[in-house]
Length: 146
Image 1: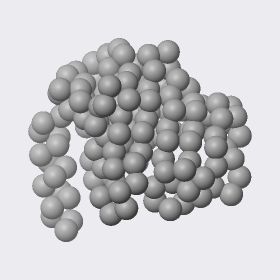
Image 2 (image 1 turned 60 degrees about the horizontal axis):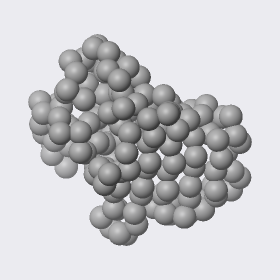
Image 3 (image 1 turned 90 degrees about the vertical axis):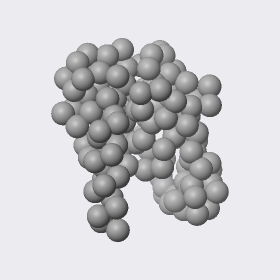
Image 4 (image 1 turned 180 degrees about the vertical axis):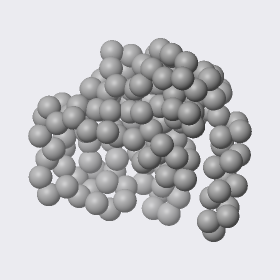
């Protein structure tokens, strides 16, 4: 299984120039990411939606959980072609997410945190959220729905 993950990561890195920029180049990342994105968990059929707005606000609906936040996507890709995504919470509605996790307490407004790293394909119709600056830590692809 580890071998498959490594091969997948190599293929992704060969195909990826997160959003058509060489590593280290500046990009207008809010415009590139703006839109509604969706993924469905294979095992549970649970749906995640993320709405990124060009004004730097976002809404994440993950199962019964929802977070509204301000986001900042780095203007430069890492050497691996990923963009760092940070957020500041505006409001959270507690509920079970698609992984079955539920927060006991809402995240306080104003809390800043790192959401992870973004890889986007060349067509800008698919992105993956990665927990670390590595393709080995990416979740299911999110498809642009508008």
